[in-house]
Image (cartoon, rainbow, N blue to C red; front, side):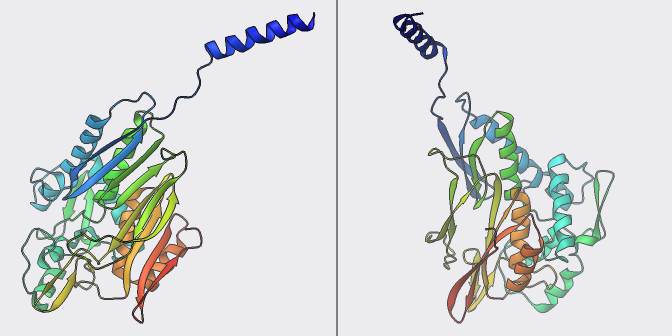
Length: 330
């Protein structure tokens, strides 16, 4: 076979390659945002078929809202709190079981039965008023994760006055539910953020891990000012941050943070300003971030270092200065 013939065959092979080979197409990233759980959400994703998944995302969020929103009077959690006999849905059961696991691991620093105290201090369904020690003492008997039992798909409360608050875990779980929805449609690259809690998978539009900002805990109850403490690169995980620097109020010269210690009944007072937790899923990260903010710096460090599934980034105050601590693998 002559060189000319070989060259001709090569040209035919090259032409056939370009004719029939399907080159990878540039990924198209779509974006959707909206409002749920009293906060905003944002979803960025790449779909293999470039389909608009807005309707599927909305359905997923509606499912979580119908199960876990205390402000939805027809939700599962609202019916539980009203002492109605209601068969618990799968979303409620998932959150309840994980929440109870974290409660046991933290000796009650995380506790979904904290609702009466959250309301008392003006961070729930009731208006803000001056709280007395007697009022706190009268409600503490109705708070305790071990006072509620799951039996045959029903939640059995020791006292009818007990109420459940999923606010410290529901946003994280909503991120997980949307992530499951996107994966069901074949999405392998996405970032879901709901009120500061998020799930990331794959890569961003530049083909690298997602760049996520951790906010500096600057006091701002209006949520207008936002300063970035650090930007981290993440993929295939959930991340949640808990802090008192935005959700607080001042009454008669005293400042009250939204983080209530279920064990004492009072808003926390310590030098830990914010706790950012990374975990395999956002629901777990959300619950642990709250537990860390309740317990304070030393206990938060201890828990993070003892749990292989957790990574932590803590910001605290010492001698008037803002200091950061991170786990070795963060």
